[in-house]
Amino acid sequence: MPSAAPSRTAVLLEVACDESGSEGEKLVRGSTDTFAHASVDVTTGAALATIERVRVEARSPATEVKASVVLRPQNRRLLEWLLGEDGPLLGRAHVHLTDKALHLTGRLVALLGGGEGSDGAPSERDVARRVELLHRSASRRLGPAAWETVLADFNDVVRARSLQDAAASASALRRGLVGLADLPGLPADSGELVRSVVAAVPDDPEGLLALVARGRGALDPIVPALAEVLRHWGGAGRPLWVVHDVQATLTDAAIRTAVGSSADGWSDSLEGISFVDSQDDPRVQLADFLAGAARRVASHVLAGEADPVLVELISPYVSPRSTWVDVHEGRDGIRPRQTAGRRVIQ
Image (cartoon, rainbow, N blue to C red; front, side, top):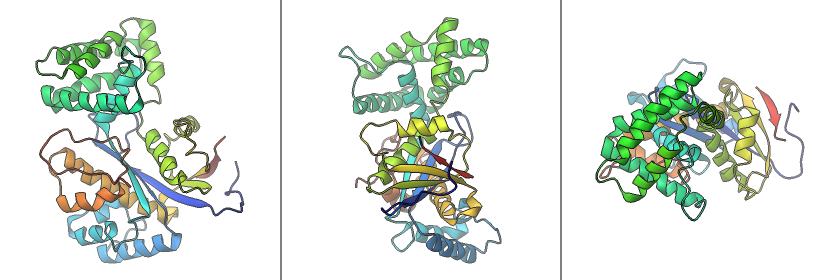
């Protein structure tokens, strides 16, 4: 692997990335309900100047200023400047948001084959619509906590470390899904989808082992988030290099999955990825600020405690392809905008 990006005649576009809320493939009943992945296109000089301003105005003695500093209530004006029109990020940064429970609902449908209808495999958009409807309906009919229990059982099946654990979790999952399917008032499309998924939950050792094998590495939201980085910045038509905070879950296999997740050519510009310690790259620290702010704002929205000012400020950064949908009606929501060594991707 080369130690530096190769020379080229075209101007290299180098974006820096960081995330907030990562817990790997544990998607429910963890420390966070939201995952945010931010990417920024800023110069090192601009990043250094921003961090110095944050350090001075926040009166932070830390060598590395983290997102938690700008998220403190006493630093509210600093956060608003950072995200606002006069700040360094607007128009030069991008965020992919993931509602972890919604993401897990999608993986439930995908891994158990519940997305196919009588006419064969549906479109990606149609699958997304079914998943969102199922997530909304289940959260409303069962209640968020009970639906989370069903999702946790699925999460446990895929992450099981023994056949016995997988069997126990699969049994609990089947019972939870049957209970949901039998609820009155569940939309017909969701009821049909749930029954399809129930029928696909394996109860034999071979089927359980196959499900666990298919699920390994298929749940972590950082993979579609990286794919969105490539989709968004790859559209600039320039060779792309991604500088990312050290992240153990971004293995070669995960990167290949992200690169290969679309056939429309938006990842063709990717030259490679650098993994660095965030304290060694001020651009990654800015990405940390943005990811931390986006995750905090989004988590408050999910809890029904939205801050309208911060929602308005974060919305221009948020990808319309985020794994995100408001489960509850009648609340302020995020409206995505509509407009340590280098690894070469083989």
